[in-house]
Structure formats: structure tokens, C-alpha cells
Figure 1 (cartoon, rainbow, N blue to C red):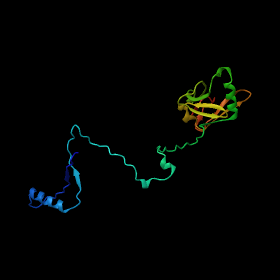
Figure 2 (cartoon, rainbow, N blue to C red; figure 1 turned 45 degrees about the horizontal axis):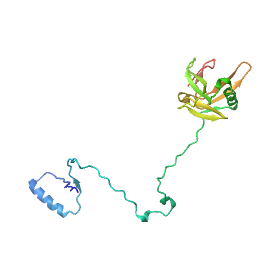
Figure 3 (tube, one colour; figure 1 turned 45 degrees about the vertical axis):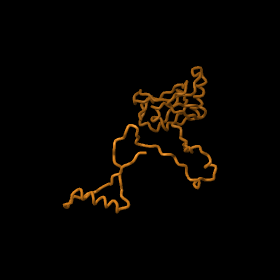
Figure 4 (cartoon, rainbow, N blue to C red; figure 1 turned 180 degrees about the vertical axis):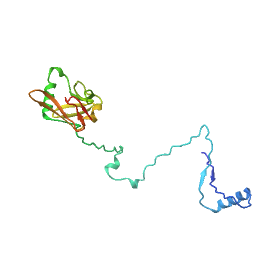
Length: 197
């Protein structure tokens, strides 16, 4: 068992003609007269076998504090409940677009495809253009959504550019194509090939 040495905290105001030895004698008598004196441990170097911190035993609560419920008997640690928030899909896929994607996924070019992958790349007059590809495997970092029975994977780099976009399939006498109504778009080129965010 190690013996701790404590040294009292001393505040000395300079003044008067007393010597240091007189102060020390007076201080010793003062310590004996004052029952509660704040003390601090003396700093000293640690030996080879000594440790700075010692483990304290964990004490169990007194039996009077225990509850008589099943929760008190259960000794497994309580897990915090995770809150799951329902989030909206980043894009809105119309039924016509979903039907057309289902037709494309049943074609010969899309054998084994899980869904489609929506992305954005730089090209065209205004800088950004939409890309649609078949997703043959689940992309690791892509955001996955399922609407009208169709899985759509959105590339991470495209996510902020397409949030809130309505994807539709339109057919006319001259053309049939996927259209994108993007509320984030600040402008489109005349041919509709690219957009600016």
C-alpha cells in the first residue's frame, strides 16, 4: 500500500518583518486549529511498478433501488431505438414512363437487368445531359428507388441535379422519348439536349 503525501495549499501575502521560519511555525499551528483545509497531493515521479490510474470495482446498486419489474430482471443492455424516417423519392416516375421501362427491360438488350440507372453527364450547349442505362447489377453507392414496380438507381453525382424531377414518357407523330421536367433547371438549350442547374 502506497502512502500519499499531502501538502497544504498556502497563500502568503508579502509584508511585515516576519521570517519564513516564523511563518512556517504559525502556519503549522493554524493547520491544527482549522478542521477543514483544502489539500493537494504532492507531485512525484512514478516508479517502474507503479501506475497512475487504478481500476475501481464496480458497485452494484443497493437492493432497495431495484425495481420489481421484468425490465429490472433483464440484464441485457438497453438498445436505443432507431428512428426511421420515410423519405420521398428524389424523382417522380409517371405510370407511362414506368410502363415503357418495363417494356424495355423485357427486351433482348436488357436480359438480366435489375432496372434502369439515371445519371447526368457534361455535354451539349448548356452543360448537363441526362443518361439512362440498364442496371445489370446493383450499384454500390447509387440511391435505389422503386415506383410502379420499376427499380430506378440514381448515380450519387446526379442526385442533387435531379431532385424533384418528373420523368415521363411522351409519344407524338414525330418522336417518342423520355422527358424530364426538372424544377432545378435554370435553362435548356433550344434542341432540349442539355440543361443548366
